[in-house]
Image (cartoon, rainbow, N blue to C red; front, side, top):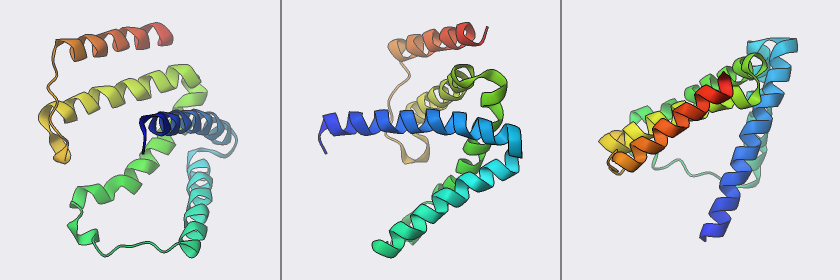
Length: 143
């Protein structure tokens, strides 16, 4: 896949996460966290079931996947639930600034130490500077 398409896909993912956050916040305020998470996952589950009926999926190599990778669905519940709860209380920008900043911090540690089979990328001065500037931005947005 060429770089332009990858960038478009990343932007599309960012737009979807932001819209999902706002929509989850609206549902959470009216229905509560559990109901809004249920509706979100039920909708996604329905799409996956329909897609699977149209195209077969191959799970033959599932035994080669590290055990911790199977926690992705549970982590997704935490992500969706926390987004739905945080956004109406901190706003879309403030909530996502904290969520994304924590993602960057953990991602930098995962890269630096090579955790979970990630390729090692040292946490050097430019990366530390970028993370520090981002944290200052988070503080300003949430002040």
